[in-house]
Length: 550
Image (cartoon, rainbow, N blue to C red; front, top):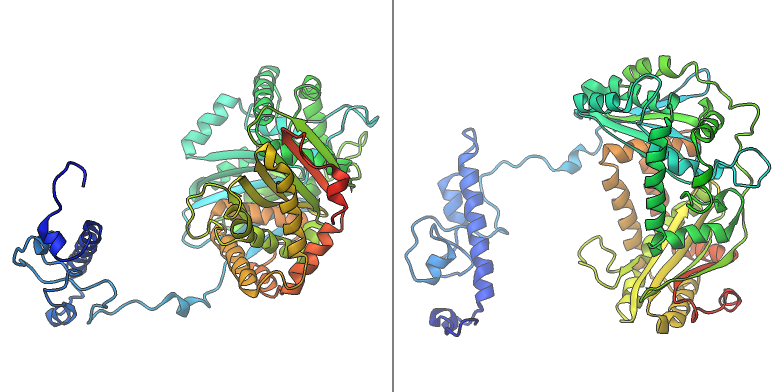
């Protein structure tokens, strides 16, 4: 022991370590506190003394504490109170509430959808007992709808979605930015905006009482932005700083590179505004034109969680019923055609680790439901992560990439399966990082892992069942969040035209077989390979050498 003092003879003579006694101490004190709580929490229910004495063990056991706790027992003091039973010993005479399983058949909240005459869809799910509401406006518009420079189809709007995200909740024709902020503070609201390649969303949360005010603020932000020059210039500088910061983040760089190398057309366009090309062309006129062409009625969904549908409809309908069902006639609001072709992208960077990603197309995207669900489970099955992790349940420590790669090769810094799925296409791949000297082995290992899951018999039933259970539990836990439920409603309606019941997803996942996993993996790797590498790329194998292995 530190300090040079000898270990207590009373501890040594009983043949137990000090750590065991600390555990026993905590065990005894916790159980004592539970007993005290039970005996004082309710006047209507009392614990018979006989029940306590029946559950109490003999005083010779170190696992049971007296009123003085384990230290009193350890020091030989006489007990001053009743002995406390182990946590595994049930207390007799208690009337426990019915288990949750008996209440499974309680009716679940239903998603109600109303379509206005101009095509705007208003959907909600009222969560009983909830005191707060989350409302979102989801728009079928993203970087895929932007016009690249030199396309000959109007002004360049590349990077507009990124800038619109930053310009959200600024001045409108009805209120200044200062007034908008003060109104949000007055109702305790929380708002945010998010741009992606395929959809744009504006969301806000507040207590139910202020749901009408939140809906009005969201609609005002979407329909009546001013794009004042001083606000625009301020946000342009922030966007430029974000883009520069992202350029040194290998995860962001690799994901952007996979899209630009793998796709020709809409999905090959950058999500982030590029300082060297896009930012100099973006201004208020470009944003107004982009919003006018793409923020049209049939492409807008108002979704809410924790709101009464009739009340939501009475607030949103008057504010959206006059929205035009089509965009400006001078421009087409249909995104450019996009085709997956595969490709290779490499960038040298001063980094101790080289990052490499191998990806393939997910044909059909979310609208090919069976394949999309299988890909979701396949990602969980492969899993992966970093070489350092806190571990624990739900951290993927039993996934294939952990057990077969990260736990085997100490040179690997990270090895992770990922997917980016859209309505009609998507990407699935493995992103890995290691030192430059090991990067060739890294690509070889990733190739073998792809081929293994595509080979029948390589994945065990236990691995598949664990992946299915993990996928289902992750979805169900996420759906406990109002924000996630709102996003799920809005994005599903934009994708499918309705919201699918979660039980349908669970049934589809549970019905997947080992052959289904092998089939979807083989279907994916038969599409053209897309490679992206960042760092010391000299020793990254040639694209054709890797592609010929699939």
